[in-house]
Length: 399
Figure 1 (tube, rainbow, N blue to C red):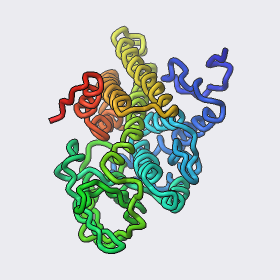
Figure 2 (cartoon, rainbow, N blue to C red; figure 1 turned 45 degrees about the vertical axis):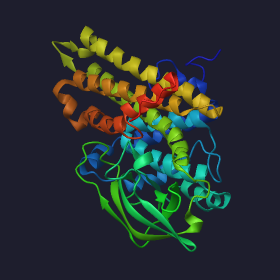
Figure 3 (spheres, rainbow, N blue to C red; figure 1 turned 90 degrees about the vertical axis):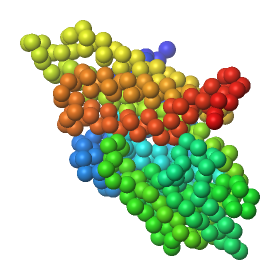
Figure 4 (cartoon, helix red, strand yellow; figure 1 turned 30 degrees about the vertical axis):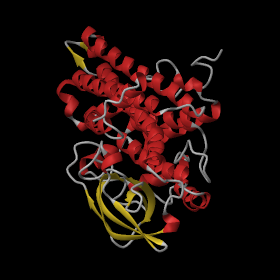
């Protein structure tokens, strides 16, 4: 039987307490190792500066592209097709170093590429996915609107009207990650003719589509969110996602990407825990490292327990996803559990650091702030709880 010592996991984080990476084959472990090396060498040393300035490190995109992790789980043209489990562990690895970069990749490789892969025609998948997998084209996903978030399935107001061989889009979108610089934006709009929600790929610089970058965020400051204004935007029928005929298509995308957020949450908790543990070994009070204090060890073990439990749940759900058995309630339970446990863990990490916990130089403060965004997006705790509650009781408690 393999052990942690004989399978070459020498660079595995100490937060992988139960050796979950052993579930991956050698090729996937090597990929995870490359991601770890890149994020540690290229992202961690610079990310606090970009976080402070609320700017995106565009120079890192080339290195991320070379890793070959965009659309990692998908089987579409040009996509890596490596499966949900390794995709999740890569998302956790990115989140462990920086949740903003994990979110950037989740929007591009998860939501945007996922929409095209799951809802696009064969021609559309061939047209866009290979370039997106190479990150030559960056994608965004436009669903949320200024006046509606959780109730988007019934309240989506952005409209689409057929006009010959084109569609005319009008409306507003908000909180759209990557939108400030994306090449392709997947816009979800309600067809005026049949009332159904349909998806459209709107290309950069399309007339009538404008952006306002959202400023003054206290979380995921590196992610470039924007409000999108659509005024008589003309989109050809060839850019309507041909397999998206209702909001159910959107939900199919969100089920998969919600698992990605659960993995990001586990990564955010891991990052905070690891920085806290390192700090307690270096920080001395009363003539000894604070890691030797009982109350500090109590907090460290609770953090590790949260990280390990969330990872275990995510692993099983990703295995179900790879087997084609993942249901909405599975992804929702993982998202609820991982984000709640993440919030606890980053709070304990900040507690361990005392006053130093609010200084970016120790990194933990960034994880504390970023956790607040991860806690809410891709379905709030309350909405995901009701999805699971409906599944286990047979009763819908949605208003």
